[in-house]
Length: 215
Ligand SMILES: Nc1nc2c(ncn2[C@@H]2O[C@H](COP(=O)(O)OP(=O)(O)OP(=O)(O)O)[C@@H](O)[C@H]2O)c(=O)[nH]1
Ligand SMILES: [Zn+2]
Image (cartoon, rainbow, N blue to C red; front, side, top):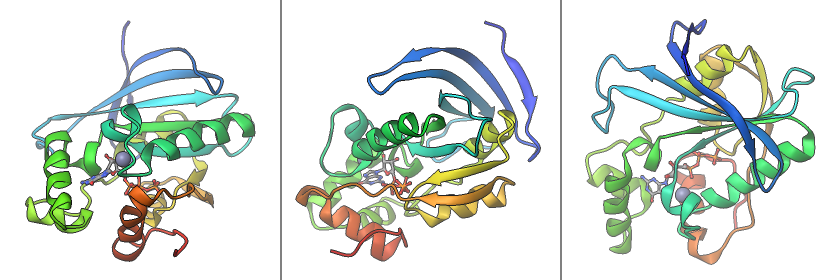
């Protein structure tokens, strides 16, 4: 299929690579693939960044619910209970379908942008007592490598200037606003905690400023 180049208002050149029907257990979506070139290699040495948009309902009828979900192979595919990712993804899909419209922007930023192999090495360090932040730093990474430019550019491309953002991470709200997307409301993405990821949530709350209930 021919790609449709588009310059987002932020100046980020992105390309919509595909647009197809996408039935899911939660309901009917469209799946769209997006790419943007990078001027220098990212933390994984790649010169292109990709993301997928799962679009449900008429996103122009009201301010849509948006979830920016970062790739977590271990959680999203294998249902890992080291983190809350999979449960958050399911919550987002269910909430969007219940609301009638919305978008899950799934960005391929495995391990908060450090990549899969480094994330597994971070797991190993965590097994030896480090928390998620300490493990990233010990491996030579920042605690979080994401900047959320591509999700913002996709929203511009789709002509969605304002969103209700489903997240516990204030940096996502700030990043969208910095890139010209208005966040009219933050919707909690908190899921019932499992003992296996209590510490993971505690570190997000205490070290990364996520808006999570203290236990
Ligand atoms: N580096 C690292 N990344 C992890 C680990 N566990 C999960 N992740 C990644 O964390 C990312 C999700 O980030 P979170 O901090 O859980 O949540 P968030 O997306 O910032 O915030 P919410 O919108 O509230 O979910 C995904 O890319 C996961 O792959 C880990 O142990 N180490
Ligand atoms: Zn995860």
